[in-house]
Picture 1 (cartoon, rainbow, N blue to C red):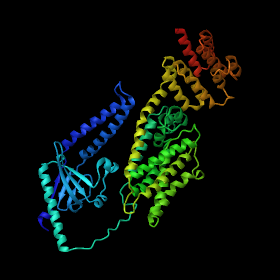
Picture 2: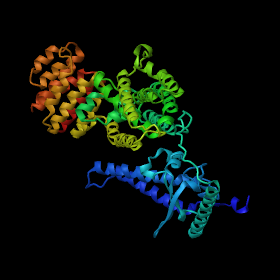
Picture 3: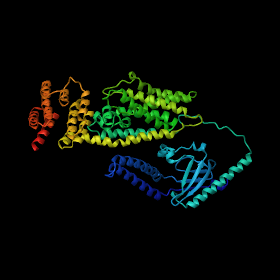
Picture 4: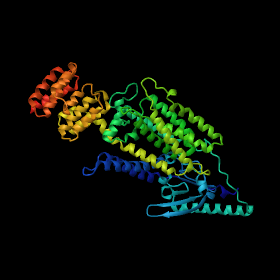
Length: 578
């Protein structure tokens, strides 16, 4: 072997330049976060939140990509007589024969060599780490690769000249070899058969599991009341984004369809879903690629949320990634028909059946203790996943190792994540309103905040909702909201009309008189409540003298733990000030 055949050159990354750009991108990302939380006072805060979220994601992503280069100890470029090695594809050689052409692009601040690779060879390249999770439309096709000469330690012209020299020698050696062998008949390239172990590790699955665990830690850390045995309370799940039909319809909080699938109701719930997701990733992500795996998961999660809200009782709180996971296993079964003549088909069906069948048959998955299983979400996710997988098969050419239109799956997943991220703002507001007593807002004259707070308490605490709805009515009336009585009538429609405190509702709806309400109070507690609420009726009607007498009576007769006791105390204080 001649000495020049062993030629090899390595060029390290210029980390000072890389660090400078990293700091700039990190500063922009931090500024975008600041813009989201503190938008200009003369601008729509929703626009500031949207632009801030987009900027934080974009600049933060670039910073993460640069950080990888900063902490890496490997060279930025390796050139030899065999080919070149780049950090984008670690451990993989780009032979000179795979480079169809190349260009050098120079400008004021750029100096790059652009490689145009053979498409078939480019399809065999595999990115690693964060780059493997990003779509090609964002970071560029594998068939078109750039070498940034300005980020390498060395003279850009010298590096480019060496690249040109090695490329010319490799092409000349290839021409000489072809001349010696003579013409050969074209061979039909055999498409490699796909195996379950052929596409690397299910990186997206691992990332998704980490995100679900992190969100659950957030549920425990930021709950509105202490967790019980490591599980968030129902109130916490509602406040932090679980599906809850009354709030979704009354306040248009449809973003809950996107946040609920990322939450969990307990450690057992989280653990089972993480294990199931890991199994799904081993079976499916390596088979169809992370792009469509992500798309099917998020679409199935949304389908499961819709089915849960549509089928279940309106007052059920829904959380969990089960819809998305069951959708993945249904997609596995559908995708197995592509490989029905190979051993892969049996592996796919057996693996999927281990999770799918128990998830769809209640008799095999009975709820334990106080937990309940959302079979509606399971069926919705399964239908969505199977339908998407069958559609995917129609656009999956036999000669391709992965389905086409992967960017569509990435785009849907990106929209899902963006909506869930943008939902943090209303979730934070809801949590603050819940933690701050709306009664304090009421007697401070902040009637709008008080109305919102009592509405939140009514949806979170169904047992005491009739009383919170009454206070919501009082706050709206004091605020001058024209819909106050209509919303009180709507809230009363959900109640048992034969039960207390529906007579109080009838008082404010003009259907009963104060003496009628008193006559329907069955015990001392209900009588004290009747005295207080008839006092509110007198006060709203302008009869402050009779209202004061009622409030004094309620203050002396109601238990100190009652909302009416605190209400009478506050009203007497306000009347005394007047």
